[in-house]
Image (cartoon, rainbow, N blue to C red; front, side, top):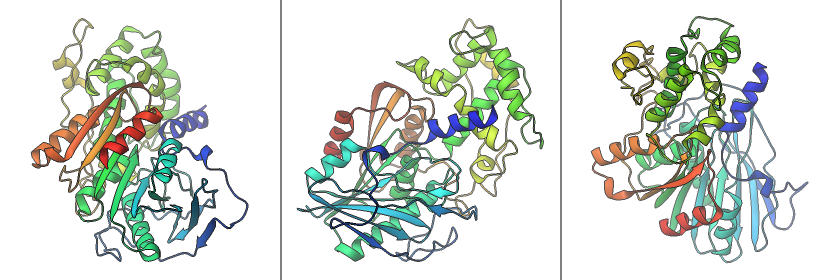
Length: 416
């Protein structure tokens, strides 16, 4: 059962463009060209060819790359190739308006094969129809790697400008973890992009992993079931799959303890709102994925996470007070060698010091990347004195990254 659960985690977490809308081509054609590999990315803290500080933290995992060839839509030319350890796609309209959109995909699991994820189909078609070029890179490593995503996207920007010249405007669009790529990029690469759109984005950075840590800590306390985290135990799967369900019940039939857990999660993620219940059902199992895959908190993102400063709340009438909840929830300290803006710029909460306009879309019922990410980021942006650059839109929808074609395309139109 554990591999099945891991599959649910990857399927729920992965978010990006609609790959099914980009049929693979067996070989380059008249409308397709390929470009050879470039240099391999350097370690975090080094500088890229553009002179920007690298944000990514390599795990040193050997990777393979899925072939990036694709069929361009009518009226456009497809270009694809390899750049360092990443692969990329570029789609150039026949009548280019001298503007380009870079697309940053979401979390793609922990496998060793990297792949390009294009923009959502509706957005892609709009871009080409209106004369925008778009470019998308895989990340040179999978995992929760927003810094690597930001670095690889910036490297692709350099390649694009070598091939086509510097465009009049460059925009960045990111989904899910790609939203973290967006905010990191606007904060650390202030001159790279003219504006950005983040959809269902983990815009507050490491706070997203803090949330998943809180999810597990709340389940442990309300259930009364000890989850062996950081103990080198192989029993985590059995605890999550057997003991927790007995104590908490299911989303449709929760026990009294389960009702406490649901309420505490509701308040943690933004309070009462439309489609919370539907989103909770979708992520009820999947959000234990981090502790299942890394029970000893060894990966950088997990080691850097913490819930020490979180003040939990619960709705009244459930047999548990806020004071009891906060006194009882286990607290996990961050490894400060990992949660460091100097050594791991992508393993800390984002600063809010955005440099260009940012528009965000977020579903009210998203429980993988909850709408509280938007609340946290608004506070950071306001504290940084950049509030006039941020526009946020809440969309009444259940689940993760579920926006209509109209919602996506309207948002992009409003950005540009």
